[in-house]
Image (cartoon, rainbow, N blue to C red):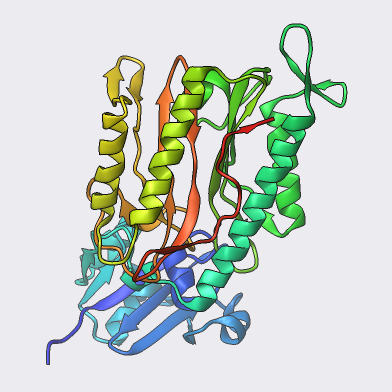
Length: 370
């Protein structure tokens, strides 16, 4: 029988999805987790030991601290490995370099897993995980509705500047309102995007400053549930005032491509196939990808990504995206971006099935002129 390489993670459960997935314990401080064959154990400090024994979903042992000078040279984690006669460990690609070097110095070979996800099984969600994501997606949609509702109630002055309750309406104000709503529901807002006008031609521009009439606003909200730690992710582009024909046509192109991608999506195809389909459709419709000194414009990002304990995880719907499986939860988010028009993006989160997909997103996708 082939001997399997031990697997080691050293990270914070609050910041690293892989170690949280393995242990179920979110801590601010880092701790080691070790798999050796069928044995799965985390090592807790005295501070966290009692909590870990109560909450962790794997075995828990105390992390013994080095006492002698010789032990200190090896370090606490090195001592754990040497006690178990482990001479080689597989680690995540973002494993701490300093710790890896220390282990190597003490005769333990460290092999970095090149996949961006240490546990490939994370890509296929259980029914319980899908329920968690669906809840996060619903709260994200409610936040989008709150933001859009404020924009709808805003009124322009003679110069086209928007005012809400007699005060200038800004992206910062909308960010604050979205964050306060999410906090009230037990969520972290993260790097929410509420980006108006020409700045929306930069897909991940968060948005800042005054909002104007006769302009679009890209609203992309991807909050994390503090209780379950699972994300939602939804984007809608709304228009305040009177849209130009050019904008309406561009919006229609994005809506059409997104709808067709949702219809084609199913287990067994690759993310690359669906990405190429979307990119090809945009090209045929006259929306070319262009590059100049200012940047890359058109359809300039992937079609989507996995969603779960990380907001961006496997599988990817990109030029190199691999096979899609039933149980994947992915986003489908085509967009078009041009400096003189701004941006349009529509994003849903869906569960991949054998025959298609199940959409976790209920918000309308027809152009909302508010």
